[in-house]
Image (cartoon, rainbow, N blue to C red; front, side, top):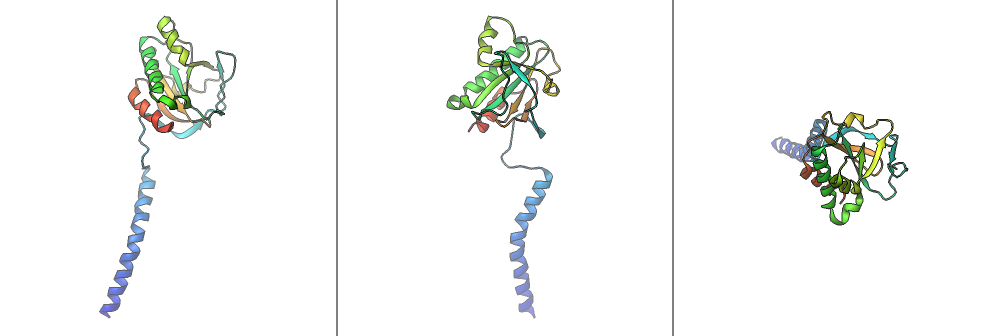
Length: 182
């Protein structure tokens, strides 16, 4: 009788070795934990398609969200007036793209709004595609401050996945861009 109970206990222990990882995975999934997904921006949950947002570019064309070159898009959204703080943040965003080296071609920069004026900002804005958000599809992510800039990272398929509010850490943005352009 004792031998039979010992064999049953061994069977239960072996079964629990297989059940415990499944139980742990279920608990982690329900709690919302995802491995290796640390982002420095705020995740857009649920992710939103931006395909219906019409952006007219300054060269007269419309921005194609379904990028045939499979590039990511970083959309910069300035406040009502893009002044010194806005220009500084745009410069850091541009530098983040440059730091990708060979992979910088996998990211396009799009500025939605009236570009800042001045010789220094004109040179900086050559790196950006300047456009106008016709149907205000990005209004929910625009900064509330006048001289600020926020950003939205859009997947090559036209889905907004990460939001960077005004005053975001450009170093964190650089790390996120390095991850997605691997």
